[in-house]
Length: 342
Ligand code: NAD
Ligand code: ZN
Ligand code: ZN
Figure (cartoon, rainbow, N blue to C red):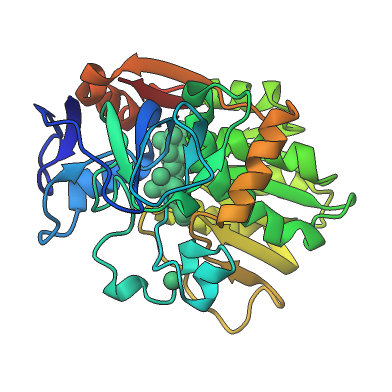
């Protein structure tokens, strides 16, 4: 089978032929329907730790069960499934509560998950180490559903914990309307009555946010002017929750400049910016550093999609086009989420 491999930091991914894997005891073999192309892969391809051995990329996956390893029950070949991405130890307090994204043993685990150290879904088939990491898709198409497992789950987790702040008289801001951000707009629309301002540096991404239900859009290429415009849009009350899906220094500075007292900045992006601390200012502002989401939250995200309340805007490409698709993502030429289809 064909597979898209990480081969080392600073090197382009390679497309190679690998034997079709066999599921061992307790494992499940999934035939991949779609593997989402996440911006995190670019961070890994550029700066992945040197000690990381080559592995198949793709940490946002869905497909159909192809074979059950010895002892696996409760599933059938052909069942459509989403694959939960952040693989924890499965036994600690966090994992037992389904929050494997916050596994207490993460530092001693050999892998962060499939496509993040272990072989992922940019291939015809993928081994899932335990059926607990599968969520049924029902009637959803695996190609369209692949982004639910990261591009939707990650903002869902960030937004859900901020909901008590997002009352009808407040303003939420989303910075970066790409793969995660375009799902965040829809999730906020589905779950919260807050006024929603979407920000990006690309006007076509802003038009997309408008179509998905953002109340206002602001181009943030000039950060100082954008901050002042956003403050005006809040009627002087400032932003209650800013979700940063970029998190480079300019976007973090923007978020710091628009939130008010008793607010929250949720830093989801991995752009490498830092927050400067200046004597509790603004007072009562909390900083959230969310990572991915829990298994039960993936079930909730899938329920939202099944109800037709969120839908990934998918651009699908053949698996063999992976290198070109990564370049398109780097150049900002992906609309919504790119999904590779084997
Ligand atoms: P993407 O490339 O699909 O989207 C990024 C968007 O940000 C684009 O629309 C781009 O135009 C916009 N943008 C770029 N620079 C900007 C700026 N200075 N101001 C405003 N907008 C700007 O990326 P994605 O796949 O949605 O990932 C977004 C980030 O989230 C990445 O850093 C990724 O690594 C991170 N991520 C984090 C988690 C987590 O668990 N915390 C999970 C997945 C992805
Ligand atoms: Zn990702
Ligand atoms: Zn654990």
